[in-house]
Length: 354
Image (cartoon, rainbow, N blue to C red; front, side, top):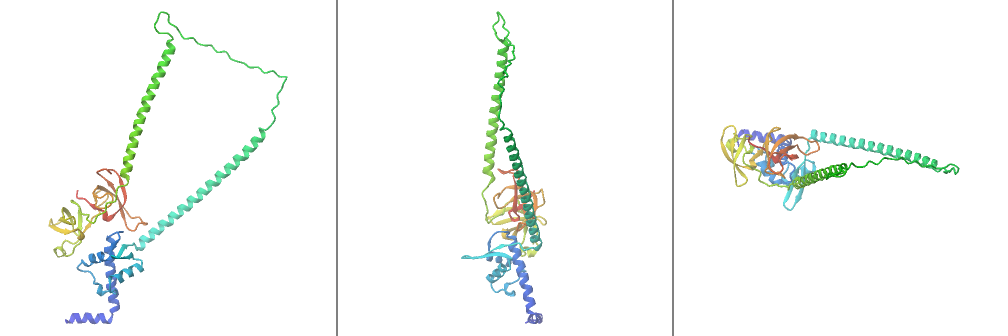
């Protein structure tokens, strides 16, 4: 045993509790970071652990206070750091947002919603009271009027009744003697009426045709409004801009570097070209990460209902009520062209090479 190793062992024996606590905290942070990147998807705990230990600088579990992965998952669940459930296939976990700032913003938003609901309820109650008072006043006036109308009608028999009818001259139509057309005024007026009726019939037919077209458009939009959920394990597409997460490739020289996907092999492997050096690598998608561009830049929906559709980045939404930030995109091609889709998860979109 070397002198430095013996010294480290001695230091560990003198203060083993603090060392173990430090390593346990680092292991927990690393595991939760991998789980966070998975988003709100339910995943096997062992899959997350295997992805975590791929990092060359990871903390070994035997350096922590937990002896097994199951005990560690139970600890996280009791502390409320993730959602966990045990099945026949093993432990499954789901990331849970515990950021105090985000939780505070979420609680503030919920309080504002409750205040708005309370204000709306008060306003509705005031309106109901006003309507009730108006009905009561109207009923009181109606009763008073009905009492006044009940007076007996007396007829004066000595007074004679007289009716006056105003005489009205009847205009005769002008008749042309020796001509073929009689009653020109009547004929011209009836002709004008017929023309108006024809115009009205034509207009109503056009309106019916336009209404039918609008109904057909609505039927098509209703069919396209709810696309089927398409979620697959492979998310790599050609011309995506991705980020390399593997520290071993190139002795760590390509870690966190951006690259462009040139080809897809076996669905899960991609041939990528680094943007800076131009080096070409063949790497599995587990060692790659999606890149979120700025607003207005092109993206590709790589998973979910709109998988495979090209879109444009509209906004990055950090809703305090949501577990994690989402994005809003606008579909730029295909059947859903022009449709704005909100609440898309970060891992479901990726920057597209321009």
